[in-house]
Length: 127
Image (cartoon, rainbow, N blue to C red; front, side, top):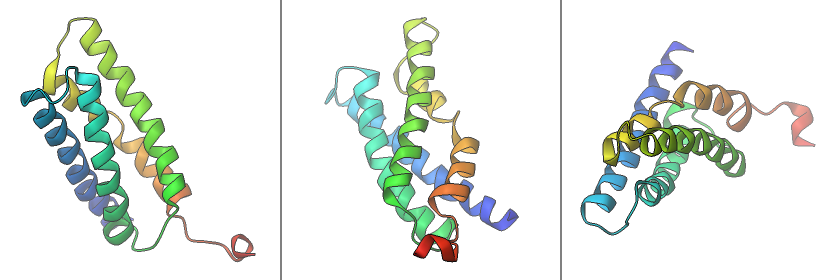
C-alpha cells in the first residue's frame, strides 16, 4: 500500500505538472484568454497522462476509463471551484492560481481511483 501510494504521488505529480505546464503555455502564448480556458486545456492533457500512468505504474492493471473520467471531472469541479474563488476574489490569478487550485484534490482522487476505478475485479463483477 505504501509503495502504491508513492507511485500514485509520482504519477499524480507528473499529471499535475503536465496540467500546470499546458495551462502556463496556453496563457503565456495567449492561445487562450482566461485562466479558466487554460485550466481546461491543462486538465484534458493531464487526464490522459493520469489514466495511462496509473494504469501502468500505480495500479498495474486496466481500469475503467469512464470511471476515471467521472473521478477526474469531480476533481476538476473542485479544482475549478478553488480557481474561481482565487481569481474572482482577487487573491491571485494566472498560472499560480491554476497551480494552487490543481494541488487541492489528490487525496480524494487516490481513494476514488483505488476503490472504484482500478479496483481488483471480484468474480461477481465478471458475470
